[in-house]
Length: 349
Picture 1 (cartoon, rainbow, N blue to C red):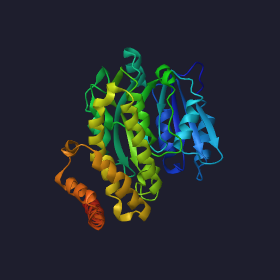
Picture 2: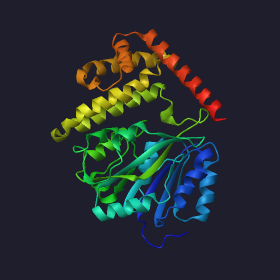
Picture 3: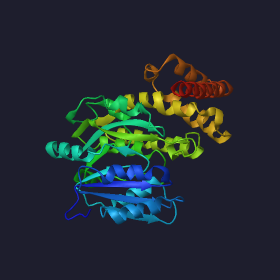
Picture 4: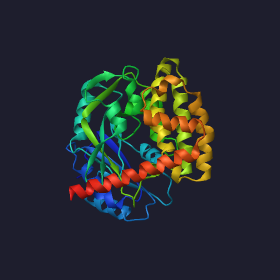
């Protein structure tokens, strides 16, 4: 299909070693009910068959544009490369192993045009290679099921949990007014990017009717952010969170967001790394019981009020430097989870 006029939506898709999922993912885009779109795919030096798949799709659909990196530059740079050539009225991001409703961009375009939002956030659920679906912790807390025509993050503090870029439908004029960019060379860059969007807008739409399907890759094909125990990932998380806090602190108006953000960090971010202590290296452990522990100690005590007793025990052990005990708990819970999954699969079969 050819474009005979300016596209309404530009969809930016970084692609890296996603051959197993790429055709399904692209099918969701080329079959959108909103046809007047452009699909900007940045192949980040994939070592599998991604480039060949992209080229085959582009032969049959002129809406697909391919940028090909000779060396891998990472998703942040790829997204920024896509941003440099967008021509649509709206901008959306999409990952090459995920999926989305076929009428998603038509619904989002119509909703945005009707109410003139800076950007719209929409729902997401997790899905695995077996097709099973699970709630996304981040989005079940931030996207509650009710549509909001015009709001902002101060009215809906739970949006601090909404830290993904691909569930944002962004007015290009708003985007270019602030010249948003992704932090290059960093994992978890979506966290900072999302807070920059939220703290720049007074007119956000919340539209849970549209669903994005966020894939949990199988054990032989994990995404970058699924490898939590990697030391670089921990360094990057610290960098991104520090800068996210600074975005809030840079404008007194948004200081009320600090407490909700700290609660989110306690409930999700820090625990995510504590749960990996049994399979990390010494450098990772030293960072956790150094820089991360100091940060946790600096938090006001009331931000721990929402966590479970079980997680509070983990924090007590963490703050008291009980490394062996935490590693034992982390390993035991992981083995229990694996065994429960095996039992569940046996029952299903």
